[in-house]
Amino acid sequence: METRLLGASGLSVSVLSLGTATFGGEGSFFQAWGATDVAEARELVARCVDAGVNLFDTADVYSAGRSEEILGEALVGRRSGVLVATKVFGRMGPGPNDLGLSRQHIVRACEDSLRRLRTDTIDLYQAHGFDALTPLEETLAAFDDLIRAGKVRYVGCSNYSGWHLMKALALWQQGRGARYVSQQVYYSLVARELEYELVPLGEDQGVGALIWSPLTAGFLTGKYRRDNSPDDTRWTKLGDPPIAIPMEQAYRIIDVCDEIAQARGVSVAQVALNWLLCKPGVTSVIIGARNAAQLQDNLAAAAWRLTQDEVLRLDAVSDVPAPYPYWHQRKYAAARNPLPRHTR
Image (tube, rainbow, N blue to C red; front, top):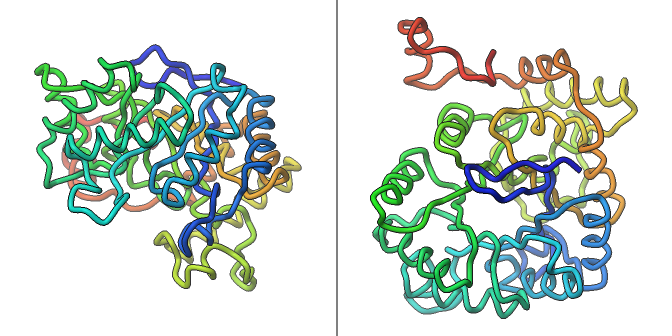
């Protein structure tokens, strides 16, 4: 499988990585995602390793720590050959310091994650969200201390806005904490907002992009159609769509994906994943699976590439109006503001 450097770091990661939010199934929310146990996790991890996947992503809040525990058990005997990424931010206890990105919570959460993962070092430790109540200098300094202590190798962020990330990079340049080498972000054919701020920022500043929910909570697998939606899905179990989707356009996107999939003899999910692998700034696409069949189909998306014409068809059907100030720059200052690569 192809590997790409993670931002401006020297770390090579596979273009597909495995997300483990389906491991554990603790609580009603994560039960709807999946309930993969240790035996099943070992099989999924083995299939990924055999396919060339070297990055496995989890978070402490996934099933209240159980996802980390299962991943740690599944990686026994394989740990030295793979990269483990986890996250800190969400609530992990009843106390006032059991959430967020304070030094207190980060240090304690890191120790807990190391124990659950059965490892001495977290390869990529990520801020799972932005904490507006904690000084960013405190967060980055705590991450830097963990790196210096050998408990963490690299740090990244997730779900930051453009100014959040740029401020963090500016503080690092001033010598006030660790540098984010990656951003874990939501990106799919029905969610292209980050192409205006976060992708160009990442390319300009050397911050790799790890893509979460590339199939938009299962919508882009092709099982959802205008006249037929399955009953036993994450959406129906949660009682509300987990992610906002522009439905009419989304069905048009599915139609084009289906046409390309049938012509190529692949699944709709593979087309959606492959489109992301063709987009500028994308380092690795995080796939998830409830079973081995789903995993094998998703892994196959890395074995081929859409043509330029196919990418342009998908770009066209998934296009959305440019938000301000980008429509203004295109209309009134186009000579000094070339179109970003994704729109050329």
